[in-house]
Image 1 (cartoon, one colour):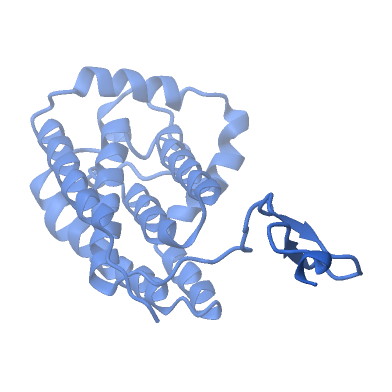
Image 2: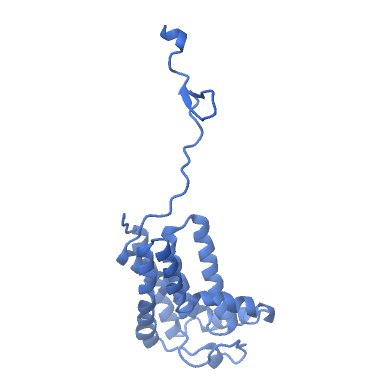
Length: 236
């Protein structure tokens, strides 16, 4: 199997790490609290009719999601992808709980925003970063080398919707989610570099239109001959 290590993943590691660091500094120093709170209240106050669909969407960020997708990857013989997804679970736990939450002690919205609407989410514990956002954005980075552009956009849209759902439910503010997304991108890219990336799925080959100097031969099959070659009369 051909193993690739993409330069793009290296850039994602750098960019994601910088983004995570900036979000951590902003959260620890309360640099963006006013704007963060205002945006949180706008999203959190969306209609209650959205509760059920958004609650379902945010489930793609639970800890078991990478394991479920890894099982599907094994079924399609994407073993390197499966390895990256399985490794994501312990890596995420270490970075989230033993690093970021130790550096940044930030209450959940239910404990610091009196107007927050809480929809079946905890109020205790540290909110930064969003663990759901870490999972979904890491999975987007891990899966993206194996799918086409349209599927990549669909994955990114699903990750964004799941992250917004956590704000709507009242579990996190936008800064918590942004920090989690940046950390997830970093982890996904690091795992791609660690395990390598297998070959992308190959689609049907498109040879383009026939060359103008070729014409079809009669018969049921599609055969071509060059019109530049000598005819039977010219060869006599």
